[in-house]
Image (cartoon, rainbow, N blue to C red; front, side, top):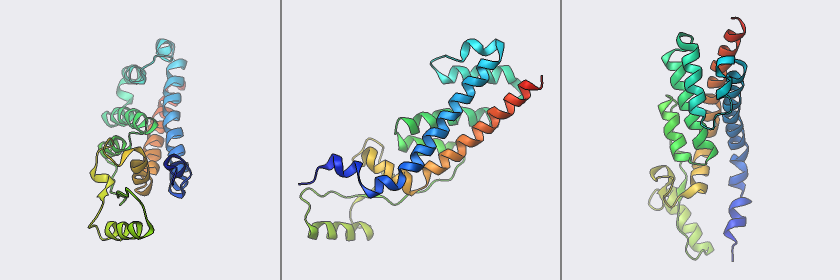
Length: 188
């Protein structure tokens, strides 16, 4: 009998994408840290640095810097905050939607969910062949995050489609905007 919990946690597929997930999560956390640090170094905004809702800090920074932030900069910051939440809370389908809103092209990773109620070598082989021929199974990308693909299926899908790397790149763009604002604040 297979202990499904141990299988999922120790699978090769899990290990293949865990580092890219950790990198994306860390890069998303850096966006939050830098927003909070920026608010903390501006006397008018210091009271917002510890606000529970990051959106409130982001709004106040946008007001404070006004014209120094383009509409696109504001959109990137807002969508990256939302993307960060989706990545950290493992809502990978919604994270892909946020990447699309950021203008990042995404595609299916080709991960297919197949049902194996009583797995035998013959049944596993047949199901894999059907999935490869696209006559069996369901593409995880065609499901919602709460469908049977679940967190593990969407984790594999996101990893296979390079969504985690794309999220890291988006977070780095947001960080560059915050760094620019910080420098601008130092020059005034």
